[in-house]
Structures are given as structure tokens and as C-alpha cells.
Image (cartoon, rainbow, N blue to C red; front, side):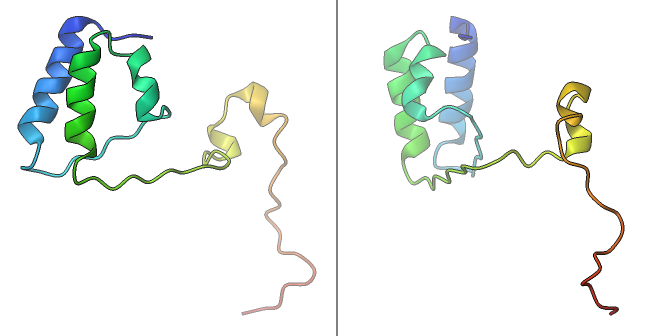
Length: 94
């Protein structure tokens, strides 16, 4: 998927207006180096990434999805193990 030039410009203007004024949280399943596939204008993207990465804190989360089995589509639900609603035999009363 790629963004239209007017979408890129609008996003850049929004981030530029927020730069050094307010906090912004951005989540993505792409590393910033992979954003070139989304943004056609590499000069604009470089300026955007420069603003986003200046004074930023990056948190990279790797691991399994946090979605529960009930949130997954029915085809994936069948493959997910069922959670037991009864306490195990080794648990002690509180």
C-alpha cells in the first residue's frame, strides 16, 4: 500500500505542527526504514522521519499477538487451544 501525495503532505503538515509542541504516539508494524514503500516523496519522508525521531523514545515489541482467541476470526479460533475455566488440581483456596 502506498499513500497518495496529498495524504503524505497532510500527514507531514500535521506532524510538523506538532513537532516540539506536543507529544505524539505512532504505532506501526513497519520499521521507519520501510516507510519508503508508503511515501512516494523520499525528501518529504526524510524530513518527516527527522522530526519524528528527534527527541523520541522508540519501543519495539516483538512476540505473539496480544489478541485473545475470542478476538480472532473463526478459522483461527479452531486452532487455538481452549482455556480451562476450572482451577487446576494443584491450586489452593485463597
